[in-house]
Image 1: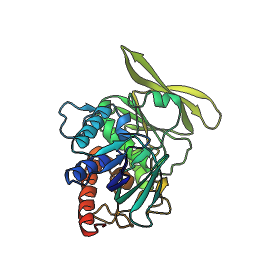
Image 2 (image 1 turned 90 degrees about the vertical axis):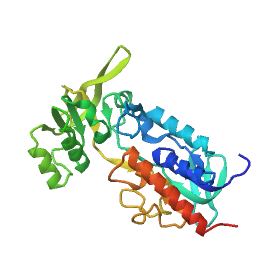
Image 3 (image 1 turned 90 degrees about the horizontal axis):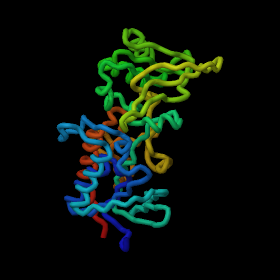
Image 4 (image 1 turned 180 degrees about the horizontal axis):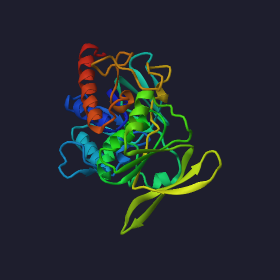
Amino acid sequence: MTNNHHKVIIIGSGPAGLTAALYTSRANLNPVVFEGMQPGGQLTITTEVENYPGFEHGIQGPELMDVMRKQVQRFGAQCFFKNITEVDFSDRPFVVKSESETFTADSVIISTGASAKLLNIDSETKYMGYGVSACATCDGFFFKGLKVLVVGGGDTAMEEANYLTKFASEVSIIHRRDEFRASKIMYDRAKKNPKIKFITNAVIKEVLGKEEDGKKFVTGALLKNTKDGSTWKISADGIFMGIGHQPNTSLFKGILDMDETGYLIVKPGTTKTNIEGVFAAGDVADKTYRQAVTAAGSGCMAAIDVQHWLEEHELA
């Protein structure tokens, strides 16, 4: 890359980042997308995506992101598999640094997403997308009439468990303690649901599964009692992580306004952050919906916000 200055730099390459790139490239703003540590975002670890409009028979997560990437490149957006390690938004042009290069930009769109908090065990990684999920609204449909486990003790776990009872025959909430962090209203709602069971003072030590005819699937979990250390197996067709999400915003701490969890704060009805010329789209600023389609929608909003902002603040 000979010219390291750009009108628009987009940090992150999930549905939000790539949709922002699509709209800004079609507006002749020649955006550059830095794809980061997980090109394509969380959809790259999702197998079947059936709730993204336009794909009647569903599409594999990595395939969807590959199609989106090719689409934005067709209109001239440049995508680089680089990780941004440092930013300086104190003055314009803004400064964005990777491990080896420095770039400047008239405007920046942040779409670094959020990562589901996981157990960080090998078997969880092995079956992620094959029965292990971190999104009930994305994958609950696949577990009609089946038994599932939900890990967690907060509002996220209660909400996921209640949602899953629309499909699953039985939902067991696994929690490491016997007291729950969840709000009383959420806990009471789960407790009253006849399909939900509680297994307390327990953690998942291992995700159990099988591989047949080249397909992987979950068969259950090995649980460990947190008080006496005893272990036992429980059968299940799916395991959902309900221990929350962590927005990928550590790079912007002390620079951009964020809430107590780390989600970027944008001005209502816009994608504008507290710094003029810096915008946020997708899960990085969305703690409520966290869907591919809402992320894409906010990527479109960010692109239009950027376009209008650049027209008003054109640098010489």
